[in-house]
Image 1 (spheres, one colour):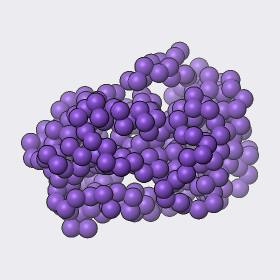
Image 2 (cartoon, one colour):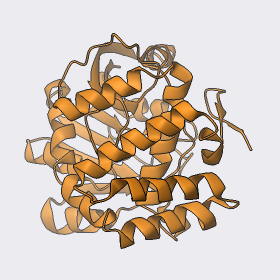
Image 3 (tube, one colour):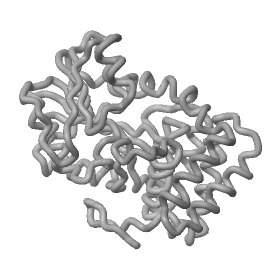
Length: 306
């Protein structure tokens, strides 16, 4: 069954992605990069099993998400993810910190709160906000940094009235059912002249596009393989890996802990027009490329002025 996302694009079922042989080969080669990064033995056998489950399910959660997750647990894949992601917050903070203004920071969709904590340690006053409370938040807010955390409901206005100098939307919009509402509600909480810093998984990247920051040979090869896909297939690749990372690797039986995946992807130019239509000036876009090897999506960073 085909869905329509916020940008009126057709979103195919995961199983239907593999009807395209180019996408199948791309997924196989990119999963090989990920598993090699995790130092997993016999990656080919694991890739074959994941794709078999991804192409033959009747019920996606029962027949693909859970059994694929359980298989990856048994094969020791999931236990290596935290170690490889241990410096993810540091990487992201290194990307956003040059663009932060002095003063207050609101981290919208903060996840585990680690990026916000780094901003706090860098002498910013920080508020965390999300639609679910990550298991790390309680420890972070009560024992380590004493940061404020605001829990809000998807689709509802964030219950905050304070104005911030900076707001962060880090890979948040493509998980929001309504990116316009999310961005406007974030902008409401930013003072005039303040900044909103966005990182997004994007498609529509031309082959000749050069990245502004470089993260090594493996990252460059993943980025090149992505750019060799046509733009529709780039979006399809994002759909697979966004779902795989959030709903398979991080599978949860609890509906409250399932990451929302409406697949609201856009091109860098499309995001620029989207932000400008909302009255936000894009001061800069930074092409990060495939900067996170265990999260194999192409990222751009957008610096917005209210």
